[in-house]
Image (cartoon, rainbow, N blue to C red; front, side):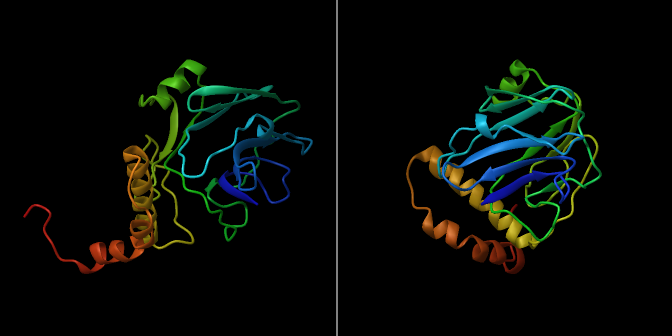
Length: 212
């Protein structure tokens, strides 16, 4: 009942970290990391219920020794104490799947960013408000029809489990939902259900010149 958002934890759950979306009631997103004694520390107790059809901004920080902090829409939800030594592990970084690549989770993510420093509460609030914080940015994956890294290091990913058309269609679905939420009106069934069809027609069949 958990959909993986970010995973760098091994299959034995003895090293690494991950971010998961609990699809049971109450629905919530939480972050967890493992110490050298294979004990998992999680922010699950801090998480709030995620309403259906709503978009939220989540941020998690770890100071490397003792404290995990969770944020929702730029506001701190609290902290979790960490003991022991962080066990980083060697698992590759994955989005939407765990250490078994075939185990894909059904979750929509707008973008993911990584920094190699602990951002302050004020900085996280600024990022939520739209500030483009490039300082110590390690990677920024916007998932705009590809898995490329828009950050300074070009850590481009490899797409698994979806074709490029499916990825484009899902990106369009995200924009459809955002427009409906902004307008507080509209019908979602047709556009969401037909996204794969008109995406395939537009990118693979239709011949046109956008400048004409």
